[in-house]
Image (cartoon, rainbow, N blue to C red):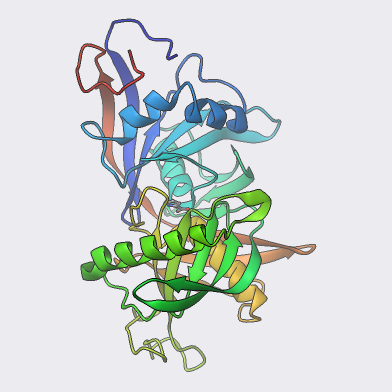
Length: 335
Ligand code: PYC
């Protein structure tokens, strides 16, 4: 049960976009929503789920919005904790969201330039707020669990993909044959949903039986001839000048990521390392279907692949979301 009375509740939120993908940050938290990010994630999946629905869904939100609740730190050295959620529930990590939260807290004067350790439900990440406003996120270690898995997609045929972790689970598919462009997103969404339904039906899972709830389609630029010859050699589909790859990422709630997706780019880095295609410290430029970009690098810490993703965010809204319990469209469970 939410600890609210019959009075309207005002939720202090700041919205931002990171390379086109929105983040709504609940900047002041709420009494009762306390604990480390794992405990708060569990609460948001259960008793506090009406808060997630109120912030994310119509009429106060929209389907492709990602939310974040900022929490006091619970371990020495951390600046704050964060839990992310979307239209269908909580997320393990969120790269674009971390960049958005850091930019938001900086705009509010609550975070200085420099490095900040941030607690998330899947481990600690480190964000660096640069003097020019860009943000780098040193993510959790990323890895490939399964390589080249064949999936039979009804009406399309067989595609192959790697199952990889970048803070969320991804099916990373290259031989899809689809053009990745902003005017094809309905077709791409439909295709990714069919890919996901096919591998779910086949019982494909991440470690410990975790659902693989994100799908990434990518096309890579022709490498080795400088960064100006930009088309996927197999399909001829374009990748923007200076980018190494273009992607389309479908998130768990059947919404596509307008940014190149930080956790997907991290998972992609792990795949590139497994393929012997990216050296530690080398730069990988990942662009989205919109053409916005993240830069990725990685370091090896022992055997761990630790990606760092850099991008920019901008504040778009600063105010209060109001939920009045007498509103018939206050969400089920709110009252
Ligand atoms: O940037 O990691 C990300 C992300 C996950 C879901 C939406 N964006």
